[in-house]
Length: 210
Image (cartoon, rainbow, N blue to C red; front, side, top):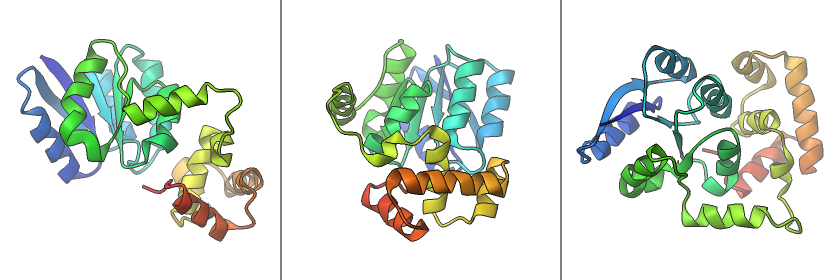
């Protein structure tokens, strides 16, 4: 029996995932987590076969939680489940230690297969993502500007694009307002943007908002 931990802050999503997994006789949802802190507490307290992780939960950035999970439980396969377009976020998730990445829209059809694959030691990616990963190996391919952002810069970028102020971001990420502004200046420079209005437009253009 594959024991699964579901991490998502939306009750409707968690219930939907439970119903999908209930169709499989060799899987059971052994627990749920609503944020990154609960994820770390639960993986420390019990053994799990698979973690299904939403990287858009409130609090700490999902990619940072993923890195912590991978550091503390390197053998625990993690399937990242998110509303973010996979071509924009999946590569970062895989680099951070995820065994697979799935857009929530495809979960009803592919969730069980994806969990079985990563439980058996494989990697799960969609055909479109596999093509994206293959093209990323092409040294002549031109990267989009946001792909040059560090994970922390990308995290701040998403928060800025969602309309949050510097002080709100500082509180959420446990960093100073000055540091947030430094990151914002770097992001503007790397993406060739003049202000946060252009930043929000950029995020919408590339589908980087959840």
